[in-house]
Amino acid sequence: MAAGHKLRDRMALRPSKLTVVCALALVAIGVLTGCGKSSNKPGETVREGLSTPLGGLRYTVFLTRQLNLANQEDKGYVPGRKEAPPGKGLYGVFIEACNQSGSKGAIAASRFYIQDSQGNRFAPQGLAHNNPYAYQGGPVPPQNCMPRSGSLAALGPTSGALLLFELPLADTENRPLTLHIQGPFNAGQGKPDQTSVILDI
Image (tube, rainbow, N blue to C red; front, side, top):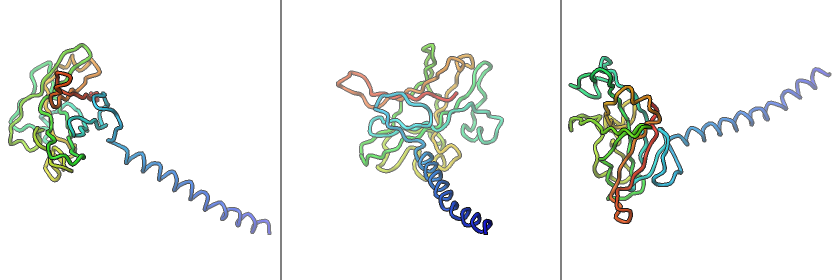
């Protein structure tokens, strides 16, 4: 008889355990769906992986890493490119600019630079206009992104368009390295609007 009571007690506990498991799963889903979103104010610095608003677009740096041109995947990002000279490295910043506002006049930024903790600045390297992975500034249609949905860059493993930088290896130790994105000219402030992202180098 006592064994029968114990069995009923165990069965009574199962629904509550299932409820706890379901609740934890919902929390995990909420955390995952929050990735890439940020409630920061315009002009605030964010970390890589979070989005930041500028000029009617939201910019997200998905990944920053050194490119190894002996690797076929990396070589495909910059066809015809030679390895960086001794003491320097090629770094890819994979970025997305999305027009979620529905504005028809949203223009993706075309001015970027990386700055290290010592104040040294580095401009992006030029990429061929027909490179399907290269970041291209210009108009971004409503409810679309740069790179455009369905493009090779958007469907690639990084999901972002490439900004290429040649950085002195010594300067990569001057952390944090920050990507500065310059947007439209702000007449009230007398300079372009700007936002920045701390890169994970």
